[in-house]
Image 1 (cartoon, rainbow, N blue to C red):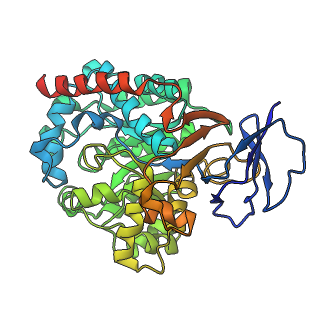
Image 2: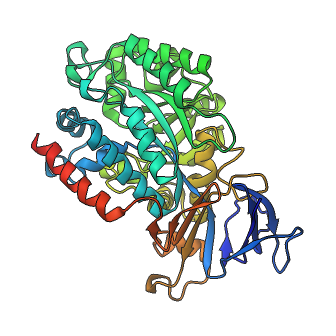
Image 3: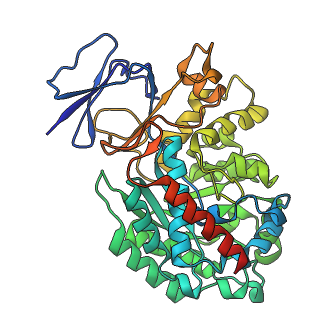
Length: 450
């Protein structure tokens, strides 16, 4: 039982007002003691990691992504498209995805997240063409190689063009296949212990790509299996109009009608809500993942974060898919969230600390892991991101925590997951990034050429 003292960080973000300015003691992958300013640990330790030049954060947590989309970043035909035309153009490309390409896409997304300081990432994978019917299994293996925690959601699309949906017919599955595979994946991979590295959730994609039946049955199955439930909702006005035209109701009414308006659910985007809908979402404790880069790229709108929080909802952050957010950098996402939300609520209310809390404890709450992840506190998992402030962009800065976002930090110096180093000196420990990038570039070209 080796005990390591991570000693005297330049600054430490606890988000709970606990004093850890002297660092933390960790053992067996957990935080066992917080050390106050100018204090010594209360217990003996075996090793010291000197953090005096490093800003220390809880590992960042990404609560919404589409890993496979790293293969179609900045693709010219959709660079200037809003959501619906963007999807309609990309669906046929994505439908050609094979297991090897998905493995590489997943690893690139996770590698980029790790290098930004992310230690736990949720993915929403909803594409299961015939050649990719074991997509989540592929992702589990890809994540294990890197040593990052993942929440892999078994997404689904069951409403094709022939029935009035948005996806091409050959990209949808029937309900029995979706539900059986969901049960299989939860049984095989979902871990329930406090140090879990893999979680599984259920994630019918969106109102315009799944039937009401699969929404209802997924909600029931999530309760039966005791797992989280995820979906896109209220991302664009087009989606709202789709719900009105096809179901005769607005998005939150739709969510309630299919049994998903509850605290098990977290939603991606959550932009176009009226005051009563915000009240109902908060009352039901539905979580919302804010995705600022994607929302700006697709001109979707601005998530009403503080209104939702005041009503009772929890807010987390997600980089969204790498063909709309285009980058998988969660620290930059926190910076963008801070600036975008200041346009809506003002500078005084949207602080760097608030944005960082969305990227840590907030996302942990959305993913049901708030008891063990997202904070630097005794008993929590030893997941940390460390940043240096010696680059010229930080010269003259005075508040180290604020400087991370205000001065544009974008890469962690070191990252630890469950007490193990997964990034050291800005380099991945477990994967050769040059080899990965080379293979990924070939795969991206092949996908578009297929």
